[in-house]
Length: 483
Image (cartoon, rainbow, N blue to C red):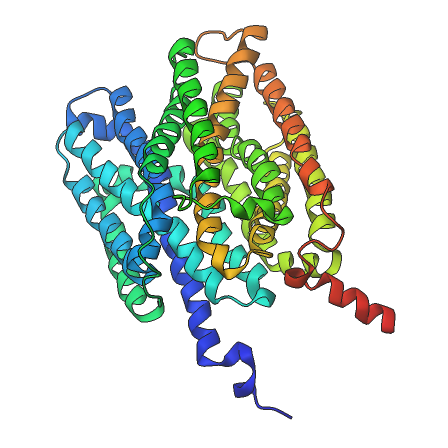
């Protein structure tokens, strides 16, 4: 009988691979937490900067715009300088920018530091994912993607709660200083774990970078405008139209140029295309929940911000509890069945949330949010995994960059679309002072449920054995047949 040391799961290479996944997941969590933890600290920061809290949106927007502009550049930089250098430099830049944010004494200094932070974050996300995907065997891809998914699920829930606690007890500066030990540890681990050299000197696609930057920046700015109050419809529509036109030209250019900044050929693979098209619509829908639910509890049900934050923690608990069941479910039923069945549960979850009222027992509401978090986690992991299950190694860099761009854009659109739907619903159910009727939120949640249902159409078109090489579902069926 072979010893445990001969098992592939216990070799030094396998152990280093698992450590690499945890390193990248930790870097993602640091980056995503930083973008959400700041929201509850804005009033105190405004006092320090001697300005109005509404003006601090410039710092928040600067970070998101830097991400949108530089994400398409990450694949080319990784090829040019190598993933080890780029990921390590990105962690250091993000950490140094965090220190600058903590030292900021005025709005302009803070905004410049957030721009630098956004550049570092734009390099970390796609390059880190690409490094993990290249070293992870297909059989272990579900587990690796599950670990890379949890920061995106946990950070939007934990961020506002953690930010409020730190700001109240330590001061807003510590929100950014907490990144220093994490960043230094991440850089040291990068030097040990990340491998990979430069892949060549392919020409830089200047038109692709310029127009993708304009398009992503304009569209993300339109998303930011849509979530603001009062709502400037004219400016939002103009910015959104510029973004759509610029991105449309960019797509045409990337398909026809010999050396595109972002390789779109991965979209010819059915599993990747389904995860990008229908998956983006799903992310827009699910991204609305952390925005809508706290607002509903505060503006419609009269909860305090702290009470609303505690309710949202049930989502995070559901996310965590679902992780151990992800791999067995995909192995037993396969990607298509799980994504369709679980996607319907997401739709039902939105509809049930629309039935919540101010007098709904708190334990019942938290149980519903817990179950919603579980289905949300399962769908994210399934979509993120099937995205890359059929991608060949030579397409992995472009696929990772494109996926990061669409995930970032759909996350911003989630807040924007839900904010616009809420404003339209408020025309039917007018606000009374600072309070918004529960009916407006309920109608918005129903609309989100419809979007979530439409997002399943791409999954419906996939073959029954889609992603079987990763899930192991096909092999399980054969063993059952022989038995």
